[in-house]
Image (cartoon, rainbow, N blue to C red; front, side, top):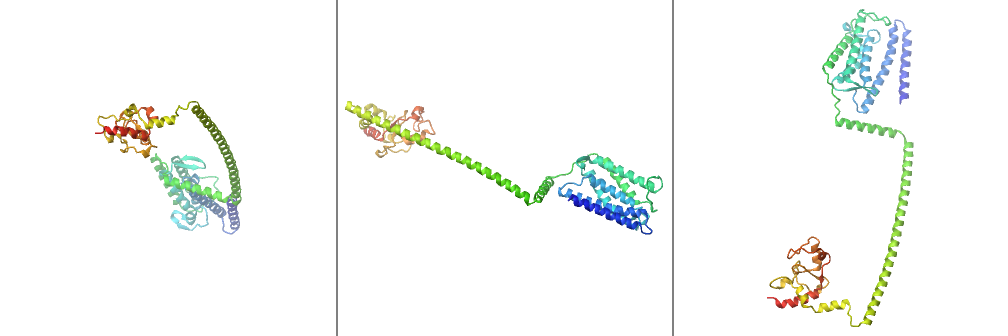
Length: 415
């Protein structure tokens, strides 16, 4: 892109130079005409450069606070306005009394208007003026620019009135009257200089969140366009690299998965071996216990097993056991033998549930309902007495059959 731009600039310069050479050999043509064609080619090159610069700034959603745009526009407008008094090309006078011709309107006025607008914005809007990557204070920039152009315009006005003589000036003046355009430009510069002195507190550019967001979006879009311009070959190479990376990651994941599965299989095998060993030990203990029980019965036939004793205890209760299963109350009723949770008498068919008596009031409760109760409370639901921790962990469960025998005994005492 840069090569095309510079080739175009070189072509414009060559064409304008050739035209200047051709016209210079024509009759009634002065040396000023030769330079006028050179300046026309230069003006076209500068205009293209200005347009590209403005487009670049617009692409990044940036402000026009650029040294090249402001100072360059004013300098080009001033120089081409001065040259309007020396050239015979486009020299038709619009207002002959104040020396304003077509050359000034075409080549100078657009740059002057653009430069004055940006210079005024530098006073009231911009905080910094950027010269490349270096930032300048906008107030100092305006003071410098206005003083420079006031001096430049003043020197030209004095030189035009023959008040001063510049020895190195080789161009021939066409004898036009006072260039009021230059004088008006100098007045505007003086006005901006005064405003800058009064306005001593410039404010930061009014960047809103929307402008910042739009600028970031434009930058992202610009970067995306550059990536797309890279071409399909680069994208194909990146896709291949990403595919290889994913394939390596997939292989690593498969290897990790296989190692995990192998660990799980080994753990299951060890667990199965421990289970079989435990079953074998349990079977051996059961056979040993059964053998000792048979030997005991053979030696002492009168000795009873624990199961037989429990059956005997279930069939006949002592006076002490009956008293231990009597609720603590002055007058016995049927309700005193009902479960304190479901308020129903134990049934013979519920022998698998069992009965638990409160150690404080000796009121009954089904064992499963008692276990559910002590999960949330450490107090008896009937008497609000505190239940011992050992009793909560290991409650004494009475078979339903045994408790029904006690109920039948105390039923005779009901009133």
